[in-house]
Image: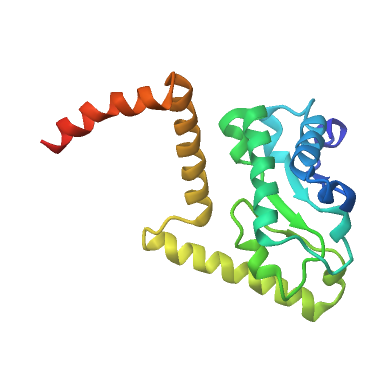
Length: 195
């Protein structure tokens, strides 16, 4: 990674799990460790030279893909690893999905929160198929821009907001000695607000 960045290249870090790792329920940990290890010597100032691609090994060229929910879980885990490593700068690195992306699934995959695009393999060798994938990406961009003009937050904005709320809730729970104490502390505030 460091050599490529120092040479002025845009570096694509591909990460992914084997089918055995997925079946063992260890995908998030496995992929997160791959990302952490690869980024050990990559600095926050280099984030604009970095693209991450999640490519489950078992999906490459097989025609099989994880569900969109499974893709989202792994992409969120990667984003969390980036934010832990780089702080807010970790939001800047795009995370692509690769692994049997085709004209039929591209639109659904690219609509998944944290999926910043697709890394297309074999389907890019067939002009009609690749053009359909490009059109799916363009359509997604047009929809996102139209929604933004209307003031509707994107799925990615909502996902970031949910993650921040979850982190805040976790922090509040750590501060409360027990749930009972938290409930009893909140009761007078709720009664005062009701008046």
